[in-house]
Amino acid sequence: MSRFRYIEVESAKGVQTITLNRPEKRNALSPELIDELTLALDDTASCDCGVVILTGAGSAFCAGLDMEHLETMTAHTVEQHRRDSENMARVLRSLYEFPKPIIAAVNGPAIAGGMGLATLCDFTYATPDARFGYTEVRVGFVPAIVASFLTRQIGEKRTRELLLSGRILKADEACRMGLVTRIVQPEELMAEAQALAHSLLMNSPEAMRAVKQLLAGHSATRLDEEIEDAIAANSHQRSSEDFREGVRAFLEHRRADWPSNHAKV
View 1: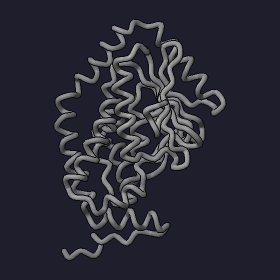
View 2: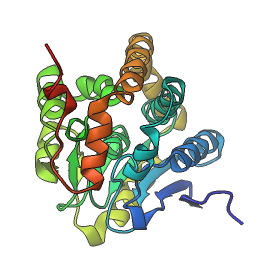
View 3: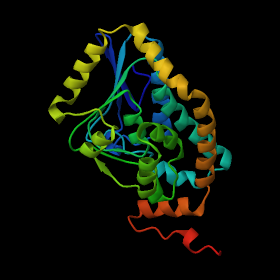
C-alpha cells in the first residue's frame, strides 16, 4: 500500500515519475500534498533512479495553492503563516537544487505555485493548451518566494510585469520567454518526456550532478537571504485584510473590494 495519498510515484528503467494526484481539485497544493511531494523528492534524491519526471493527473498540472485551504488560513497566526510559507519555499528549493535532472511534463494549467513547480524543473515540456501565470495579486497575495527564482530565469523587468499584472501566459509565449523548453502535443507529452529522460540516462550521472551543484551553488548564499525575506513577506500578507477579502471574493465568484483602497492616508 502506498504511503502517499495525493501523489503517485512510479519507477521504470531508471526513471521515476511523480504525479500530482488531486485531479478533482486540479492538483491544487494543499499542505498535505506539499508535504508528500517534499518527502517524495527527498526519497528520490537518494534512490537509484537517474532522472525524474513531474506531471499532473487529469486535465491540469497544478492550479496553485488550494483556495479552500487559504480560506481557513485567514484565521491563522503569523507563526502558522510562516510555517506554511517555509514549507512552500522548501519544496521549490528542493526542485531548484535537486541533484538529478527533473523534467516537468505540463499537461494543463500551471498557475501560481504550480507554475513554480513546472518552471523550476530543468526541462519543461508543455502541451499547446497549457497555461501559466503568477496570479497571486488577484487574490491579495504576494508571489514572494517564486520572485527570486523567476528573476534569475527571465530578468527583473519581465518578472515585474508578470508578478504585478498576474496575467495568464499561453504555452507559446512562455516558451519564447524561456520558461518552457518545448511544446509537445498532448498525446505525445509523456512519451517525449520519457524519450528525453532516457537520453539523459546516457550521460554521466556524476557529471550531471556536478553541473547542477555548480549552477545552484552560484545562487545559494543570495537565495538564503532572498527566501528569508520572501517568507516574511508572505507571512505578513497572509495576515492582511486584502488577503482575506481576495480569498473570499474568489470563492464567492465576485470582484474583490480591496480594503486597502479605503484605508486612510
